[in-house]
Structures are given as C-alpha cells and as structure tokens.
Image 1 (tube, rainbow, N blue to C red):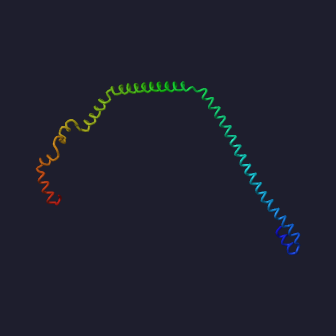
Image 2 (tube, rainbow, N blue to C red):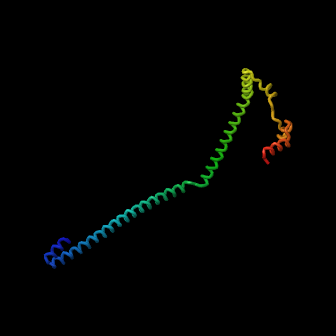
Image 3 (cartoon, rainbow, N blue to C red):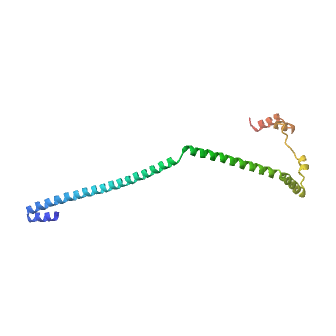
Length: 173
C-alpha cells in the first residue's frame, strides 16, 4: 500500500495518494482491532477453562462431602472407642500368654542340665589335651588388691626419696 502511495506521489496524483493513505490508516486500525479481539477471545477461552475446572472442583467437593456424611452416619465414635479398647485388652492378653509360654520354655530348656553337660565336655576336652585348670590356677600369680602401688615400689627397695633424687638429677622439677 505504501508502494502504491509512493507511485501516485511520483506521478503527481494527490487525490489518489489521499485515498490510499486513508485506506492504509483504516487497514492499520483494523489490524489493531483484530489483535485486540484475538486477545479478548483468548482471555475468554482461558476464563471458560478456569470456570470449567472450578465447576469440576465444586462437584468433587460435593461428592466428598456426601461421602463424609455417609461415613459419619455409619461410624459411631463410642463404638469405635470400645472396639479399640477391646483390641488393646486382647493384645495385652496375647502378649502375656506369649511371655508365659516363653518363660516356661526357657525353664524347661535350662532345667535339662545343658550347663552341667557343657562344663563336663569342656573339662573332658581340656583333660585330653593335658591341661588341668584347677591345679594350675592355684599357682597362677595374682594381683594384690589391698596394697597400693607406692608400697609396691617401696618393697622393691626403691623409696620415694630415691625417685625424687633421680628426677632432680634429670632436671625435672
């Protein structure tokens, strides 16, 4: 359109230039209006989708509310509490029975003399390899619990004064 206006201006046809310029202005306005209408249509489409999703959400909430009402009608809190108490009571009975059974089994197995039998097997094995525990344990050195360590050093012939003198000779104060 602008090229046409330029051609008409070169030929000196001012009237045609004016008409073409008006058409150009109207074309630009139409183009702007078209963009505005397109954006409005897009906006309306987005709003429609939003409204549709809100309607679906409201329907889901209504269904959930009905379901919750039905559950609340069928569920009696006092019955539920009593059921839970009964469950706890029966569970405790079962735990006590299990504990009694375990204690009884432990007593049966411990009373069978397993410890004495295992001691006799250990002694037999040690006798076979020639180790006598009770006879050699008497001769084993033992630490004296009644004597303090400083008296042990004195009994060896080293006194506290000797140790202090040696420390001074080494330069330790």
